[in-house]
Structure formats: C-alpha cells, structure tokens
Length: 367
Figure 1 (tube, rainbow, N blue to C red):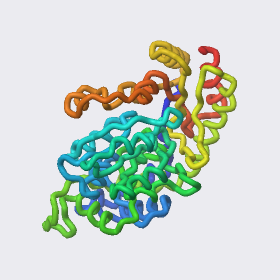
Figure 2 (spheres, rainbow, N blue to C red; figure 1 turned 90 degrees about the vertical axis):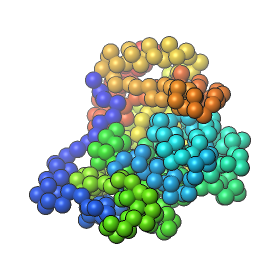
Figure 3 (tube, rainbow, N blue to C red; figure 1 turned 60 degrees about the horizontal axis):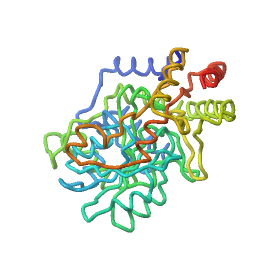
Figure 4 (tube, rainbow, N blue to C red; figure 1 turned 135 degrees about the horizontal axis):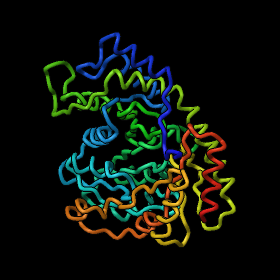
C-alpha cells in the first residue's frame, strides 16, 4: 500500500536523539533547553518572523495563541468547519465560542466574504486554516480584522513551506500555529510551535506554556504544561534543514499528478493561485457532480489496488454531535458539498516517480 503520508526519518535524526539521551538533559523546567531554544530560533528565521515558541502539540499551539490574544469566556472566534476538529477544540478549551463560516469551493479555505457576514459585537478573533498546505487568503482576512480591531490567528498546521505573495506564510497574522505531528511536512513525532512578530505575545506565550512562570516557582499568570522536550527539538532541527527539499519533492509530485490527471474531466484538480503557493501536504481532488457514495467507491477501489487514498473531514465540525448540540445548527452548503466530493492522494516526498505514475494510472482506470 502506498501510504497517504509518510514521515521521512534518517540517520541524522537518530543520531540527534541519541546525542540528547547521552547528554542527559531531556527537558527544561521553563521549556528553554538548548535544543528547544535553537529550534525556535531556526524556525523563526525560516518563517521570517521575530519569535517562535515551541510547545508539545499543534493543538496546544492553537490554545496558547488564542489565550495570548486575549480571548475571554463568551468571545466569538470565526473559523472554517472544513478542517480537523482541533481548530474548534482549541477555541472551546480557551473559553471561546466557535462561529463557523463557509469556504471557497476552489481552495477549500475559509471565504473572506463569509467571514464579514459572521462578525458580531462579540467577535474577537478570526482563525483561518491553510488547508491541505494551501494558504488561506490572508490579505483580505487581515484587512477585515484590522478594520474591526480583531486578531488573526493562523492555523498553519499543514502548510510548512507554503508561501503567500512570494513570502513565507506566518508573518501576516498576529500569530501562526504549526504542528509537527507525524503526517505533517516535517515532524518531531508530536509537537507544535507558535510564530509571531509581537514581542508581548511572545513573552506571554513563553510563560503560558510552562505554568505561567518567567522564573521557577513564581507563576505570574495561570499557565499550562505545554513544553516541548529536547528530544523533539533535536529531531525538529534536522527536519527543518530538510524541509525545503521535502516541499520541493512534494511540489514535483503534485505537478506530475496534475499533468497525468489533467485530461480527466470528472476531476477538479488542486492548484496554486496567483497569491497562494501550496506546500502540498496533501493532493486533494474533487469528483465533479458526484454523490458521496460514488466518491467513497472510488476511494475504496484505490485502496484495494494499493493506493492509500483518504477522505479527510468527511464530517465537518459543525455537523459533529458535540458542536451541533452546544453551538447550534449551521447551513454551510459549500462545506457540506466539498465533504461529499473530495478525497486526497499521496504526494509525500517518499514517493518514487513510478509510484506517482501508478497512482494516476490506477485512478484513471477506476474512473
């Protein structure tokens, strides 16, 4: 089976972990061990921002960014429903109310026009997601936020290496949150990081991740235990060096798939736009004018033939029982339509060219 995603771990990562184990410093009480600090500095440099604060998961990153942005109980946060549940989960954990807006059916990302319609006097934050590696349309989103005195927290969990208007994503929003889960473009096994240009936010995030402490045994605020370990950071330092090559290979594989599948009129293929350049975490296609049953039949046939195709976000968050019961009903037709029509193909850097060709040939045969 060709896996839908595959972490690429080499001898360099193994040696880096072994070195940490031999050294004996596995973590730091304030989350500021030498490997973590070095990783933060290098990741901030990669994103071209002033600060990066490493944490234990991408969900923790979202939670801390929301808290640091000043969310209070009852504040509303506008976000897409077509994403992994952690995006909304972090809002609820922080005491906020998730308000779901519909997507652009071409990018699958939140539609800025839909955001404007959802703003009320309780709105505090806009939380766009860079889905499947393609940046959300950040410029109009940030313009809306600026005009309404709102914060923008970007969920960049799937978009390491993506670009907006030719620049690395993560610098337009008040903060961007990244995940290093094993299926992401780079990994630390588990882990996350928040990037920002705001000095005060960075200082707040550093304290929030470690019990509200700036110095040991002196909590200045309510905090959490969200530190990244030295082992994770050691892996991250190696993976970050490899990330440009990983993204280049993903892009090459995506272009190859597009070329091979371009004549299939049943398919709507993913693509970059004038402003948004994908990092291709996944290659997500849409079956035009198809039923959910037909889409699922195609995916099942692909899997039976050795292609690890997958359907992501088959249940948009607003339709999940917990969110429907606690935050009301929503009618998001474009989100619900996409959830019935799309599926994702492998595009990760571990693929050989012959495997990319096999994926396309198998899908064409099934269609």
